[in-house]
Image (cartoon, rainbow, N blue to C red; front, side):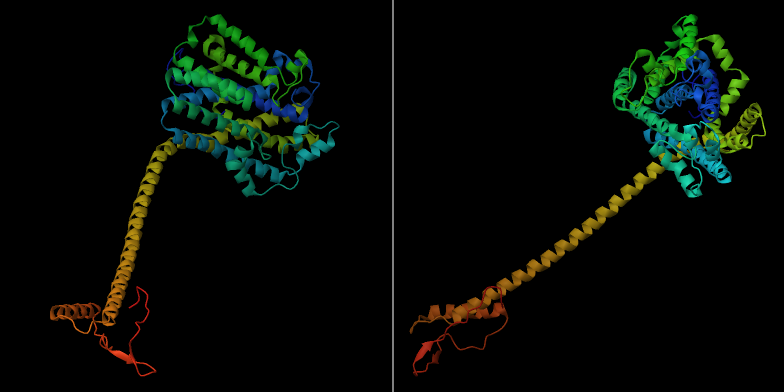
Length: 494
């Protein structure tokens, strides 16, 4: 639901900025502010908290405090905006994801810090209000009370935990941030994978998959993206004006229907955690977007300064109002000195002023900084790529050096083994020749050849063994002479 560019205000124009969508977002944020006040004090009028909500809560007047419907409007608008961003920067998948997280996380952390401060100042106001009420709202238990966790926990909650768990007890409206981030990533990936007609096919294919397997809120992002695609093709503004009026009436009537209406009407029990009203709200939010775009009186109203002002502070208003309910407003009700209408006025004035400051000090500077982040992401990725390449080169160089060392060691070992083998073979040959029994008479030529072989063998081993001549006989115990036995040595010794 973050405030970003939403297209061009002109009929059927290429994506730019649609001022009526900004105004619609602002009105939806104001409805959420009213909705949460009723959740705390007059929860009987909230269908999601009361099973016996009066009929007015399901009537078109119920649109004035239809908080869950307003959140659905945020999601459809986010689908439109994220489709616009994805289409413009289709190839920048990583940059889109990083920028989207930064866009959401920085204000969320700031809101958690504000909530931590307020809860630390009034750590048990909501619990005391519940104890003092004859029929307390369960909504009063949706926050930390008593021992408030430390500052570090609040920062971690804003940076990571609420995106992972889908909720925060510092600031319970943050349950939508997980859906905002994941829904945006779904669109980034779909747009990165496809273009043209294939993109439309993928978007339509995602509808039944999400409906069956995932939170139906993600349907709002797909519907918003389809609205963007048809608007880009110039097909949204072709219908007659009366279709915009019909869409406005149908959207208000469907959007006001709370949880429990459809099961009671149809006589069924929900088989999933999501009530059928979630689906009808997605349709109603889409109809309101169509009316804001195509029905001139409604579009003119949303483009007026009051709605545009609310649109400018809408994200901040959404993020900061609940901590004041659990602390300031609960304390004022406990005090009992002021009439309720004055408490409501104080509440609305305080959260509006704080939202203005939050917008100027946190939200708008962060929105401006997203451009810097988007520019730095490719640089950081290039540096990481160069670092990985350098690491690869170093790794390759180290691997070659290791291989050279291993080869050198193997060559030395093999050379030493070869020398030992040859030395042993030469020594064995010399001993064999030395101990060989020659005949009594031997021709001179053969005698000279034998002498040359013996001398060559001695020269090979580098020494002349001081041993008896080959025909020397060793005396025996009986005094006779027998040839001396050669020593047994294994090949390789020497």
